[in-house]
Every structure is written in C-alpha cells, then in structure tokens.
Image 1 (cartoon, rainbow, N blue to C red):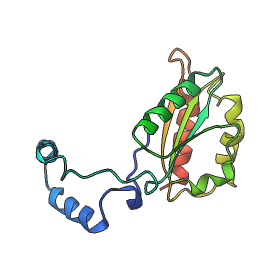
Image 2: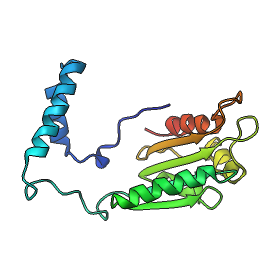
Image 3: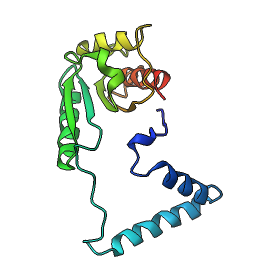
Length: 177
C-alpha cells in the first residue's frame, strides 16, 4: 500500500503554519509525538463550544470522487456505505460506477477513492477493465494534484488476493504525487 503526503491545498493549515509545526516536531521521538498529539487533543476539548473551530463548509472543500468497481455487488455496497458516511460528515461526495466514469477527467480529481473487487486471476471486475487499461496505457495523465485511496476486496484463499486493488494503488502512485 502506498502512503503519500497530501497536496498542501488539501490541508487545514496554511504553508506557514505547516512549516512551523514541522519545525517544532522534527527532532521529537515517537513517544514525544504521541504525547504532543494527546496534548493538542486535550487543548481542543477544553475550549468552550463557541470558540471551537468549525469545519469548512462543503463548498470550500474539494469534492471526493468514489469509483466503485464491483463484479458481484460487494464492492459497490462498501462504496455506498463509504459515501453515506462521508455525506453524514457533510462532505461533498460523488459515487460513480467504474463503467460510467469518464476516466479522461481523472487528472482533474482532487480526492479520489477507488473501491474495487478482484476476479479470476487477479483481474479487475468487468466494469473496471476500461479504466484499468486506461491507467496502464501511455495515455494515462500525471495525477500531480490528486490524493487517492484504494479499497480492495478479495478472497484471501486465492493466489492473486486483492491484485486488482494492488494494481490500481501502484499505478495511481506511479502517475501521482
């Protein structure tokens, strides 16, 4: 699984605040970082409700696109549950079936989540074959401003367990930031 640092436009801190935070934590041990995390949590919870920061309105937050790639419907149900949870958190979310996704727009996505199953010998589900081929082609764009996550479903008794998700993850990381 790939882990990347999100583009600064997606962070709730401005560049100066982030630089100060990074400078203040550079030489801390993991134990000290955990303590600082708890300290900030305590500070937040001691603030009166009127002074507590309110989340940015959904209109200011980049939209989240969830691509569902399912063969039997299990990945679709996971994608729908994820969408519902994100909507409950007042986030701007769009759920689209992989077969209906206009994959040439992928470079314009800011937050992308792929929920996929794996079939056969590690192949993507039928509805995601075109997207998979596009991402692995020379036509695939650079995704320099796209943060992504991949959720992969599969049966661990198979040799190519979750291979479709692993493929999506590695290719998105390769073309992304």
